Length: 421
Image (cartoon, rainbow, N blue to C red):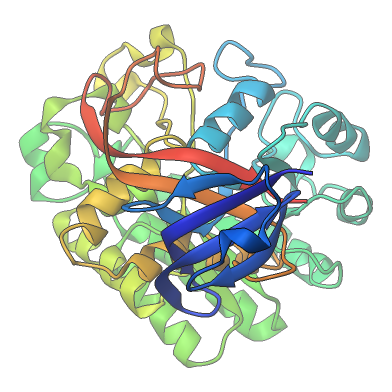
């Protein structure tokens, strides 16, 4: 039997809106007791005591969508390194997108992923592709994928065929799995690599107009209204999108939405360095877009913060900004940077951040959120918001290091991740 007592530790449980200092007793991967003061005389003699002063013990973080290099691009990231990075970042559940090579578009691919996803403190889930090869041309066998226990359906790429999208929504709504869509019209985006506006002109790079996101988003919302099918809206990045989603929710449409952590922290003004790790898709927005996303998290219009961890090799990313493949890593960086940007200065309550990274992502996936309560699995993240550490290839568990924070010192680090029973 393993027994551990966290004394005088600050717990964050967004399910019951609990942010308080208390004692937490964990026995064999389950929470045995939560109380203001648990007498040591009531505990086994070999109980490990952990002074929780200054520490955060929150429900395990959950990432809605990220990318694995494996299969097909193991030099970028393997499933093992992805899970190690997730655990190091406090994520107890990670859902990977199916746009690998080959794509996760059949039961055997799902089984292969599941056979290689064992990790002691993190659980890996796989999205099943909406279309064959995640190519957006022919609907995958969604019923077979659902039976293979995918977490939901998402290509991770924008669907350009409206007729096919409507058929997918009609068919998929009866399978009891989330459907996640990225609203992006490639015909409107063109060769844009930053959000269109004055700053894009000053940077001298092609801009992508906001309507490239909002036009297909409006179409999806019309489909949802007609078919009454629940949909998750991925990678929301513009102020107008936030406004459309807010209106849709006010009308009672069954939609949830997420943005990525980097779109909350940065905007196009940060691209002046032309760092290829800031080349994202959707691109970083204008300052007004970032402020709208921040407000959307605060008022609940945007349900969740996704990491969208996108690893690339040094050679792939060390090119001109406009030629770099879009994406950056983030599983080990998101919590400390979000905490120091929003919670530490008092812009957000701690539960606002934790809700967006833990309980709400669980609900978007149709899963039961973790709890810090007796008789619940100890699915926990132990976080020290005061530790300083330097981001380097040596300190990162990911195989990739494509991040604009490479070489910088961050404040805040996950000490342990508990996966529970």
